[in-house]
Length: 505
Image (tube, rainbow, N blue to C red; front, side, top):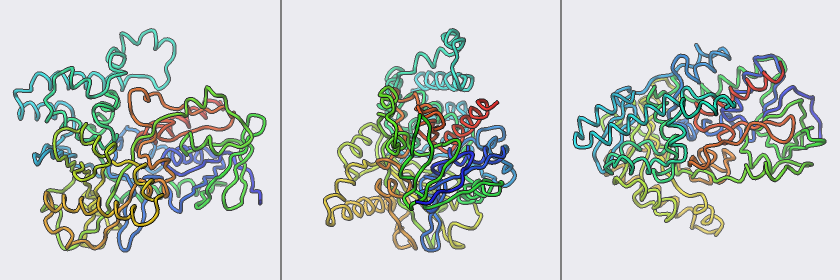
């Protein structure tokens, strides 16, 4: 086994949190080595090529790109704010929620959304007013809440953050029941449920508010697409003296001696060492790589969590028609066959019934006219829904055609829905069709059980895994040690960097 030169910082994985802290450390003058198992950087934001098309694996739109917001602040700190630019999705309806054929546009800003719904449903004025009053108060308190809680914050919390304390254990459904929200409006208000992949009866009310607040401030798509966004960050790291990013270098062992990490070993037979190590890999998966240390049971208990569910995704290259003529544009479409989201999620995740699924529909070629993702004059349509990893894994483990048969059945059912409700004759215009299951996510993104957002975003799991580990020089940062989404993981990477720099001062 060969040994490589020591670095200041070694980062396992090139997901968004890892790239963020890596770029900031590299700009600080530290020698950074990043090791990536895949042949592409970015985790779920990586781009893959199929024929003449390039698809982003799982990310379709993001928040936090406005001036002074998280992603903009990060890009500014690494010198990319004028290089990586974004297009804002339609502020008058960046998400369209279609419930049983009835379309609702979600505009930017809570007041505009409230007035739009009150005008359409005057009989529901009171529950809508109570919903938006609570949501706006919670959003304000979340904005003012400190990143790290001190004893002074605890003493003053009942006065400063009454809504955060009151609703910290509530689900969205509990709040709906509290204000007696009509079921159709429940579906509309939770229309972006795929952004946290939980139904109202399970998702944290506070998390729901946080997500819709961030997207309500502005939903964005990278002007030159996600591959340019990610590659620009990678090149920023590589351009700094002494910094390296290596692909197809999967870490299989983290070696600990005397309470500190002394090196990592990769599957291709190499060993690397550094003064400090940062894992952008799932915390529980990181723990499984540790050799030479038995971490305390109190810490291991923190890594005994429930993952978010996974997704079935279709990537389509469309030729010979314009999707704008079929209800698509500079926005996303959320398709719900009926208004009972709780039943929908139970059908799909517990009963494994994907015969009438909800769908998220994205059209990246309508979010930016920059070339690079599809041949000239052609377009991309992506469709995704929630599904269970265990179901597809069991089918594949059976061997034979069971897995492929189930995959094709879901694919064909989604085609039927798209043609019946949005694009008649769509299959006649497909130049490319690719389908991915939870097993695809697990294989290419090293995501345990194909999970989409790290730990499931329930009230009991709002407290995240800490950055620090029992090993003095090993730190964690990702969707579980931090928060999911591009904005969430970039924010986590920035917080870890600031903490590391504060510890060195």
